[in-house]
Image 1: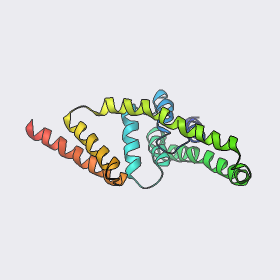
Image 2 (image 1 turned 180 degrees about the vertical axis):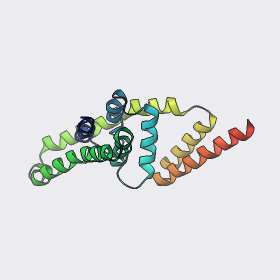
Image 3 (image 1 turned 90 degrees about the horizontal axis):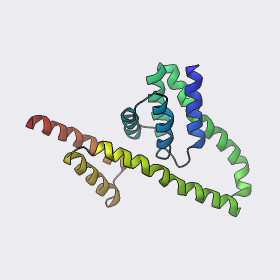
Image 4 (image 1 turned 90 degrees about the vertical axis):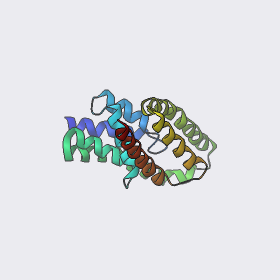
Amino acid sequence: MIYFQLFLAFFKIGLFTFGGGYAMLPMLQKELVSRGWTTDDELMDYYAIGQVTPGIIAINVSTFVGYKVKGIIGALCTMIGIVMPSIIIIGILATGLTYVWDNSFVQNAFKGIRLVIPALLLPIIIKMLKKSLVDLGAVCILILAFISNFYFGLSPILIVLGAGSLGILVCWIKRKKA
């Protein structure tokens, strides 16, 4: 039964996630933390690791959670669950979207969907900031990451790897002082 629950939860997340990996974070949090399959902190860790490992964030995170809950079979259930809606929807859209793409209703529907993504992300970002900004070192890493992305357009991979390295350095300095 748990395997079907894992599949169904991730199928639902995959079905209603528009806008990629970042947009799925609120749904992941609501579905997984409320079921006790992961904590907020674990989910943020899975998400961070999912960003720096090769592949799609959604598949990476689903694999981590599925494996944690029920091992390899659980990971397979969550991976299949997260990708199945996309396969179905892409198949349907590929056959019909070319006929209706220029329709103003379709265009406006996509505009509306794109507007929802920032609204869904903002509460999660605020929550992540409250949990992550614990000291001056964390604030400095955040500012450097923002500047690296916004002003210099550095690759997200480099920013994440740099932030991880700085996090290790900050921890090392704290331990040395203590």
